[in-house]
Image (cartoon, rainbow, N blue to C red; front, top):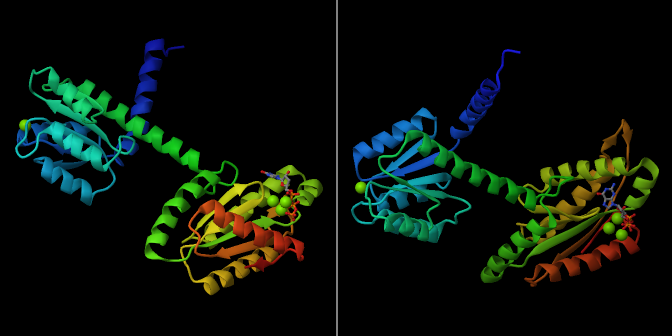
Length: 315
Ligand code: GH3
Ligand code: MG
Ligand code: MG
Ligand code: MG
Ligand code: MG
């Protein structure tokens, strides 16, 4: 066995570095420094690791670049600059962007011990003294990018239903609550539907729980494809909700009935077996701006659909 423990570690490290390259190509870093030579040095380091680079010569330009390029992940900011110091810029950035969407690394050539504290207090994630060691620079940068990626992953998981990959109940409540506030300001009337699979228990009992899961997944793909401009979510079990961007009641009702009809005719396949099922839909359209109230209203209509024969839309 010619691969020593050290070699193994090196391979592991290389492998990680290689895996990282495509990631860095997607990571935008903004370098803010009034000294062209200092900027050039940092940019050449960033280029070596294939980061996407943006530059600004002071805080005011940096804020303008951030506004134009919303997906900048990391800002590397010098401290001593005209117009606005790095720590002030840091504070400005934090007023606009939280530290789970952008990381800030402060840098300075000054010996003053209070500088790093000022940066950190103003919301910087990290601090480097010039001249810095290149490896340390890369490590701190990539650790901050790792952190942003982890938060993005956790956020996505917190908002997604594990089985169907549709937005979950939590995301639905948060997003609709924000949207309802805006609708109320504009005096527009919200539009919402609750959809429930008919006799779903019988599908589980007849074909098995796995088949039931496949039905839920297949139906969720239909939701995602059919309600692209709206917010469709799995509220739980075999119950879904759609919050409409379109506030035209007749239009929405037509689309809902088309969807109901489509699902009735296009059963998802499970183990080459077609599992036929239908949906009952309750719809509400009212000057109500609390999501739980709207859901309550839609649920009453859904119950009516169930009571009067299922496979229908009741408004
Ligand atoms: P109704 O037409 O009145 O809605 O009848 P139903 O059978 O659809 O409704 P009921 O509330 O009686 O049963 C819902 C069933 O959904 C019971 C539960 O076991 C099943 N279920 C909930 N979540 C899942 C899931 O994630 N996967 C599967 N396979 N079944 C689930
Ligand atoms: Mg400077
Ligand atoms: Mg039920
Ligand atoms: Mg049901
Ligand atoms: Mg149900």
